[in-house]
Image 1 (cartoon, rainbow, N blue to C red):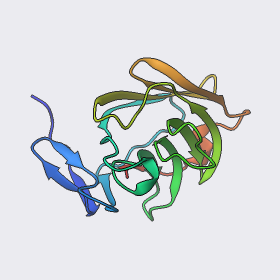
Image 2 (tube, rainbow, N blue to C red):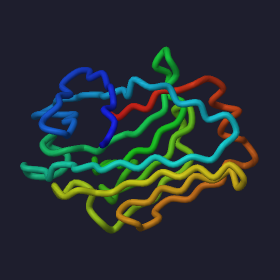
Image 3 (cartoon, one colour):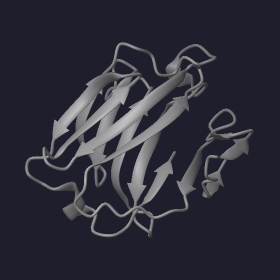
Image 4 (cartoon, rainbow, N blue to C red):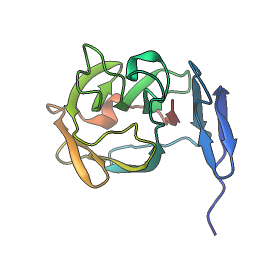
Length: 170
């Protein structure tokens, strides 16, 4: 039997059946925070989740219709974003492919990679974020395809995340 996970929903986020819907319509925004603190200490970790980003319905990705992406983040109790991985589907000057995986540390973009597979096609995507403590490396896999790998130049993740954190999605 699977354990029920307690989560708080903000903005336009809602729970439908067994899935959490972050956005429900045009220009909507939502966030979910898992109400369990995670303490990393000095260990490696991985986070697996399934995401389904709706296909744009209008003229293009820039018209505000369809999903613009999803962000998995680790936040302090006060809500400060310490680490994030974004599947970015909003085609613009920073993301010219319209399909990028981006890693952020304390709000700063530290790595990005374009992916050939569209994220906003209305299909489920299995995402795995892996932090290897010994190699001080983050790898992001989408549907078993490693699309980003980044070494943190001898900055141990657990030294930056000194307190238990919350897992959030927006």
